[in-house]
Image 1: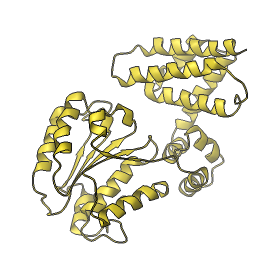
Image 2 (image 1 turned 90 degrees about the horizontal axis):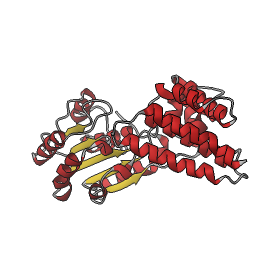
Image 3 (image 1 turned 180 degrees about the vertical axis):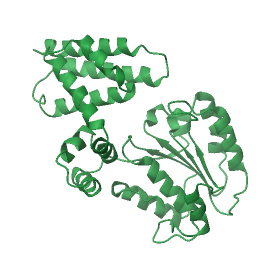
Length: 310
């Protein structure tokens, strides 16, 4: 069964307390950046509610409900996610969810729905969900998993309780990563590059993510020092996911501002961050974007940041 990660313990204990007090909300938004394990926490919550023989505040893993959960066939757990990676959740999917929630629980207990990611619902889907949020059924919990809650419509957010998963302390993250990945010389560096998010750091260690991040940061350094042209850097970045690339650059700049450049005032650096935020908005809007032109413009702007700052 799913277990919460160590840095999720406070949220987990609060959820258990709500169950004991019979004050479980009808809808909950779990907010945390990618690499924080939000999906696993949501699954653990669902399993905790649906288990009929909980043990020490966790799903037991052996009752009939847990066996159905493990097999992925529990009739009272409904999952809604995009039909294809990178696509939107459609109104037909939410209508199907709402219809299922209106029915009596087949196992005689709770009904739980997981919507992930919540920000991928299109406008029509979000509007369709409002009825279930405004007229909740008894013993029903909607868990909306969100990595960017600002993209979830205010009408949805205002009808949900929001739990935010903060970045764990560096000691906890470092200790957990060492336990999972084993002794590794790059742990501290990778955690820093991952913005303190343990699962993202683990992904970097186990895959080629670290190499990709280092390549992008080397390009940024080269353009910054006029050792490479913005056009060459833009071309080299075409192979990366656009949204992920923007996040990498933002994280790199944050480390510059809080580290190497912390005593050097350069307003152009913050103007560039504003441009990155706008670029991410265009990317997430789903509009057709010529990424080559976008990266060219951004890298040209990046090269000028330090010309102005001299």
